Figure 1 (spheres, helix red, strand yellow):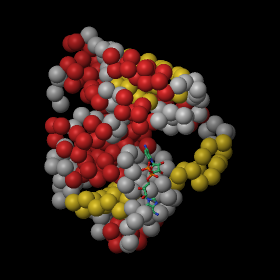
Figure 2 (cartoon, rainbow, N blue to C red; figure 1 turned 45 degrees about the vertical axis):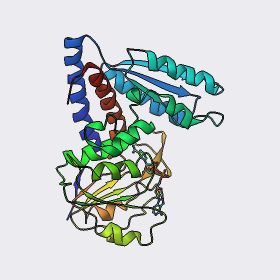
Figure 3 (cartoon, rainbow, N blue to C red; figure 1 turned 30 degrees about the horizontal axis):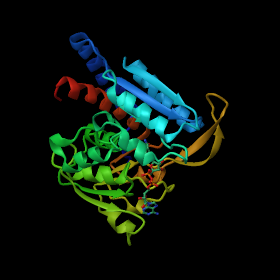
Figure 4 (tube, rainbow, N blue to C red; figure 1 turned 90 degrees about the vertical axis):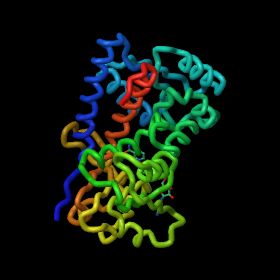
Length: 303
Ligand code: NAD
């Protein structure tokens, strides 16, 4: 059997079109657009490229976008003051601080300073608590898990009553996606197991998964024989395993591999996400959706 590919690039296009349409409607009706500020500290090439993509996407959707590029040696107090400024700015609905921050800055302190109602990354303890409670309490699910859930729903995979196994217990992927899948409601209502480095028999858990979500950061950790035939495999892992010359640009690019042995797994699974082009594009998409939602909450628009 050859699995159906769940392509993040295609789902991203669909969702961005929906967001763009809503932005236009809200602008016509309320004369306001979602406002996002991206705060970048220092000049790490990886961070610059992530932020640049976020800015480009926000601009293409018609958002108000403010770029705050700060030097590497900005003091923690100055960064906190900057966040406070945007917490008070009525035209800003989302505040994004690009991680990692330089060592002299306490990133927890910085993230916790963001107004929870503008915390579109969903990392503030208040939003983590809201996610845990579930239902109408939830405001901003963290972007990667939010994207994973949306991919599963849009691929038409049944989650109600499904056995979901999540490999990895990080605060940004493993724990929140497990928490989301266990709630009542759309794209959830599943029986969830989290496995991690302390788990004794990883294989036996993976083997019974109807939906296997892997976020370990270990190339090809999941072996083909661990995959239940016909199941849905979501590979979150992005691992650089080497370099190659791009046929398109002639430049050196990274060779990326997921946490699942894709070539063999696709012959066993019913659905599978590729790496790259799977979960990757969804994170930025859901950041845009959270920023739109933040404006809608403010305007009292439901759905
Ligand atoms: P992390 O390092 O914070 O957490 C990894 C988790 O996997 C840990 O909880 C650990 O217990 C578990 N783990 C590691 N090795 C294991 C093993 N051998 N057996 C069982 N469990 C094991 O990583 P993270 O931030 O959650 O990211 C995981 C992967 O997902 C990385 O490759 C990362 O690059 C990728 N990622 C992709 C996106 C995206 O595509 N948008 C977003 C976030 C993370």
